[in-house]
Length: 110
Image (cartoon, rainbow, N blue to C red):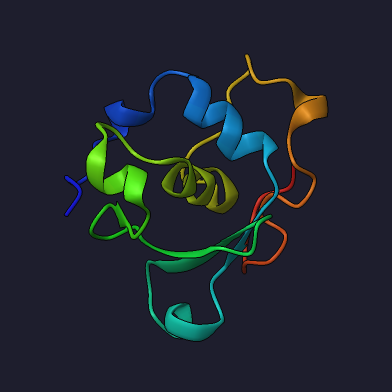
């Protein structure tokens, strides 16, 4: 089980931030296990893999989130897509995935 995420875990733009912002990932709040479940999001990657992100527990089902320090790219993607975390000024706006926040209620637009 991953440790809960403090806001300070998201303070720097690193490789996981860059991947969370630029890789195609769909963040969905109204399908499967996330439907009618506050704080749960289904994140679907370009490969078709799907991971459940729980923002209340600060966890993701992916291997990286369970085995490495800090939040995985899926949790970061949810934070960016929901507006919990602003896209940092140092991020390349042209590289940000245009689908960011598109498939969730009140999602952000890049």
